[in-house]
Image (tube, rainbow, N blue to C red; front, side, top):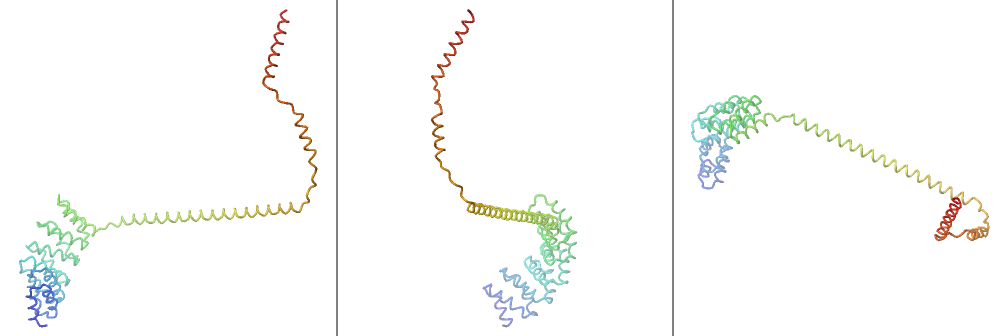
Length: 298
């Protein structure tokens, strides 16, 4: 497909055809760079995004035209996609140009440049990004804090904390600052505590396993002892049975005498005295006592 046919696709009302045209322009880098930069004005964001991807795929040849577009163009949308394309190239010259872009008078360029440098993890940009923590624009401050978190700049911790204290009542900025600080210093000390906890859990598991093994051993030992005692008792019972079988039977004596004795005992046993007899005896005893007392008085 020729460049003229690709240009016709770019003028199509179907955004899918325009996306295909941006992809096909990669094969014509000499003519495609200016066309793709102009495509940043497209109405559809997907077309603009594909244009930035195509420029980054072209590589080093598209760096200078993109930087010139970043400096000369006042449209924030084109500046955003220019920086996106430069970020994907990730060249040393790109990093230098983006660091210089942090001094721009336009807040959008400062914001997108800080974001791109953070995603590229350019440590050399730390000092310049730290200066943006006191920027007038809220978006620049937030993108700067995010960038410092992505770079994991330890020397920026105090500056981020100051900016967080200064943002009184700004909950969103404080959330961004807290996330950045966690990225920079994830606090490994807590991890050590957790490891200690896990080790203690492991030791407790080991002790429980030992206890269970001891219990099972004692159970098996008791079972063995009970089995031994049972076998001993069985052997004793069997020996006793054999002895009783071997011994001669005693001669049986007649039981007539015992029966006669029992019968005689039954006959000789006196009857029980009734309550009436006992009362009579008591009355007679009293009368005798009274009579003896009367005789003594006389």
